[in-house]
Amino acid sequence: MSEGNQLTVAPSFAALHADRSGRLRTPAAEVLARYELCEDLASHLVEQAQILYHREAPSEAGVLLGMHAALRDGGVLSAPEAGWVVQRLAELLEWKCPALPGPEDGEPAQE
Image (cartoon, rainbow, N blue to C red; front, side):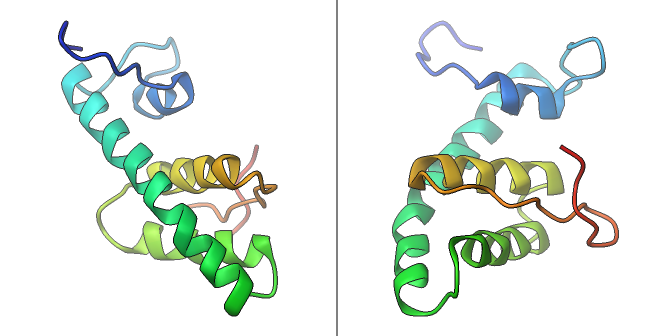
């Protein structure tokens, strides 16, 4: 990561781009850029999630699951990144994050 950048990548996000021994599989600058995108996205979705919860959605879990499906299928984020954004969004909202579907067949991801 560049010396002029004060941002530290969350270990949970870095793990998405690391091998089993913890070494990054993706260049550090790219991981930082992806992290900034995902963190910003989670922050920007807070207000939208609150609006959906109060106007349309039956539950907090319903809002988060709907956002996960949209992010996962949107083509911008990888499936693991979409899951990370939704988990971060749940943290920001102080909501319990439901088990999110896995990338292949909609089965709940193992936690």
